Image 1: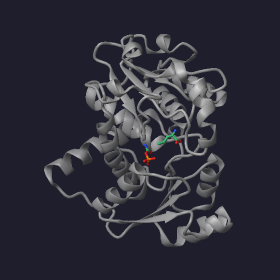
Image 2 (image 1 turned 30 degrees about the vertical axis):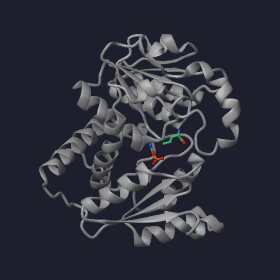
Image 3 (image 1 turned 180 degrees about the vertical axis):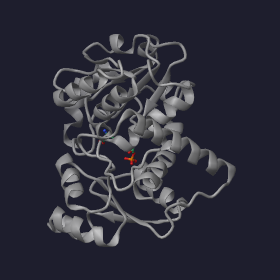
Image 4 (image 1 turned 120 degrees about the vertical axis):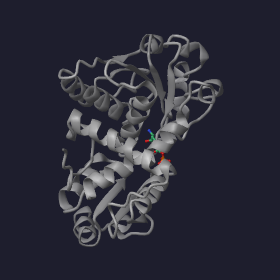
Length: 310
Ligand code: CP
Ligand code: NVA
């Protein structure tokens, strides 16, 4: 029904609501097959390169394991080991890699690098996190919410904290899927206004409400999902102290969570800092679904690779 072969995956706004729902459904189907012990190997003989200019636990392991389970092979390409780290251009890297590989995943800083890599590659490029967006995480996250709640349209997700890559992709994905997204954070750390405008534009078709607020209680009020992320993302480590001060009143703790619906879900892309953006009680409590999210990175990315590279 949906042929996504050869497409890049740089941010969810490149995909229609139906295509995103299709990827979620495919992920759920592939997950069920794996739980039944049934092999699903549409990528036999295919290879993906995983370029990492930043650290990773989940993304690296889920892509490597996922590609193996699909019958293919994944190469871990750390910036310390490839010539890109010594100044070889993105265009040359893309041209060369396209002759060896069937797909490329990149985790880097500036989003323009992801876009450039896609421009010069003749194979699909997947964004494994940039400073602007983290669409692989959000694909798995909406799959996880869908599995827990049985629906997406009309739910409310409150994102508390830094207006970063996670906030951006959750807003774009929410707008596409009809999930209301309320972001709350301190002054100076709001999400990119262009992303907010784009999410609101997309939301017109689905009825999703995209809010950017100051008061975390207002954002969390009657939420079905509370989401948070680190205060200092990769690349912003030297701002840690200043950010701890700015975000001090934005910790997701039991008192804040009390404003949400009684059956709310707590989510975090991980890695987390207990006692900073979230209290131990909330992240390790009965509402937390952090390991379901992490697991679904595997299933969602298998669906993505199968769809793009199959
Ligand atoms: N959530 C996530 O992308 O984790 P890693 O940085 O460990 O890949
Ligand atoms: N916002 C975080 C997400 C990590 C998965 C970062 O970019 O470091």
